[in-house]
Amino acid sequence: MYRYVDPGSAPAATSEATSKVMRRTRRSGTAPEMAVRRALHRRGLRYLVDVAAPGTNRRRRVDVLLRGARIALFVDGCFWHSCPEHGQLPKANRVWEREDPDDVADRILAFLRPPPA
Image 1: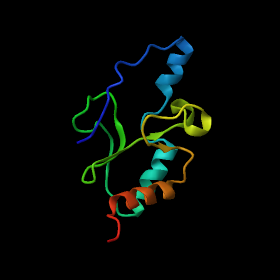
Image 2: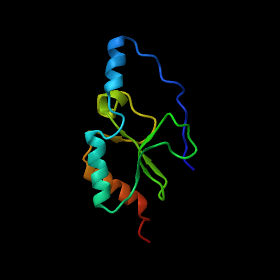
Image 3: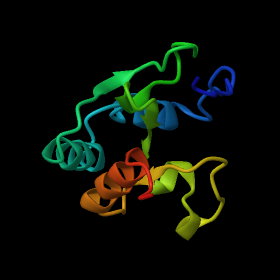
């Protein structure tokens, strides 16, 4: 089962300028996300895009969902989500926009394969 903690409602924008920037920010199909998706597809993995994970509320959406493997992948921007190189550490493992998409896809494949006996 997917484990998800609902962060609650989104905070209000601190200014009209901030609100305008946030409205124009793409939610799906960003360059880092597309690169990871292409790398996964080249490795034969099929996935769903920009969907709510089963058992969660509909506000938080998964960037890439590997249903059979039950992996929810979030490709997060370093600035907005404070990656380890830019300050605060996230509470869960995620994929960062600065990471090489092929390395990300290889890590996911390694996770899906059972260890050798």
